[in-house]
Length: 214
Image 1 (tube, rainbow, N blue to C red):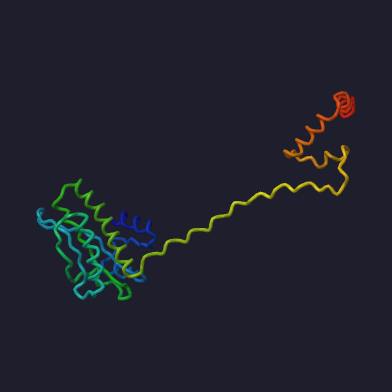
Image 2: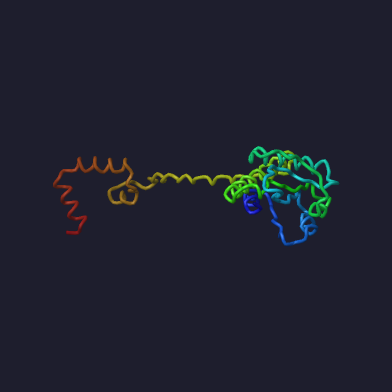
């Protein structure tokens, strides 16, 4: 569940630390120093029959802890559609270690794992992870903690090619220097075709022979 939730939160732009479950409970809470919120993810177990969702805060938890827990509980209940067992206070060691600098902390008991089969447990786990992410995100937005989306980069303007400069005719245009100004432009081609039509065929044939040095 932690891997799914952390990936989804990072996709939304949040910074997430997943703590080692082998650490002591007090140490896990202490590692939350510098964070805005702390969530300990758990699954309940009792008698193989009881089912439902609850979220716990420390027995000395603040009003902000309770509000945060309610955000998560609301999304878990609406997603899993299990019995709403409410927000409860308990003397939990993992929450006792959370520094006062952390805005809010809670522990989720998404469902009773001993009351479902393996396939249902997998489905509930993924659904619970998504619900918890949604609850955290809604809480963060309500407190102005949600990450700001990165600014869209300014589009690179497409360079506009400079038009070919018109030839300068400061020199007298003659048949000797006309090739220097020839750019293959439509009006230039039309002018050459017009000139060819005006030159007698025998004159053009002699011109072509001399041009080729034949």
